[in-house]
Length: 217
Length: 233
Image 1 (cartoon, chains in turn red, cyan):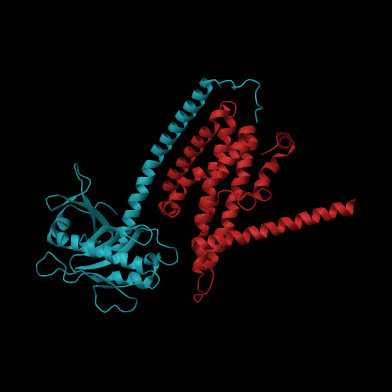
Image 2 (cartoon, one colour):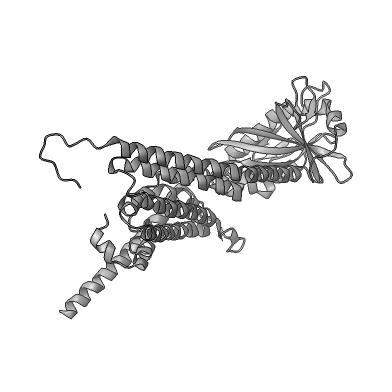
């Protein structure tokens, strides 16, 4: 939960930056694992899923924030879900209009953005307590952070599992792709490795801060 | 969080704001969805038509235009788009001179993960299948999805024998899938190692489809040659 006092003092850029790295929705909060594991078998799918989520997140955050004085507490979750589902349906039609192939590749996962706990989580924890501007920045930051994380997984999985990145072949013809990387198990492996890296970096940063404090004392 | 009140039952919240919020947001969301649907509908329909056109021209090498026909209950083919047309549809492809190159037919069947939908081209003059394209499949990436990309597998469908037997009702040879590298006859499909189920599924779709459509198309070829001109570029 975001503390109201600290939210008021933190700068607008902070609202944006926190989702990118410090509170990254995938690597730090470990939210929305279903699309993270399921649609990151290629870079382009990861990018499209990330952008679709970003779009829904920003718009639902904005609308929830706009209506925050209008929605009674008792029915807030139902209203948030309604708003999120509406934007997901809009995205679904827009993707169909942009590219049928892309729509086919993302399959059922577009509809499943509705139940991505990241989006409901941001509406509940942030947008319904903060101004529209801040909520949009929060949505943008979280959405970009989510897209970045999806790309990290999708990139690694496509390079190793298919020998290409965004459909462009990277290795000579002799390369034997690691099929396992584009199968579901590859998603778990890659996610595990990324989480390992993030935890290692976090641990190092904390150790450095402790050291700096001790030296300072 | 709200602190527990002193009375045994908390006061009932007013219901009007709740109705107002739910109905208001619901109506607004409904309107938004309907407007986006109406706005994107023509674009989506155009995308689908373009995708179909591309697929038809791809499975019928040499074709530059297509016309769609509906197989009516009386056993004849009518140009699609007219009033009261319902039934299975086929797409005839014509070359630059307006000559019938072949007919593209859709088929579907169960693959390894889910239903596979394909489009295949049948050339009535030579009585062979001249092309196949997967329209939709959820086969395993890297294994089953080779049925869409594997050049050696797709080469099976450049000239797959579906000649009719003398009775005009059945095929001379039924299409069969064989192990990779063991194809000996023009009606056999060289399978893919690692995608056995998916490649057999394609063979099965083609086997059923050709048994159903080849006799019909052969008997009523004239409907497709004479009936009108092609409807597209």
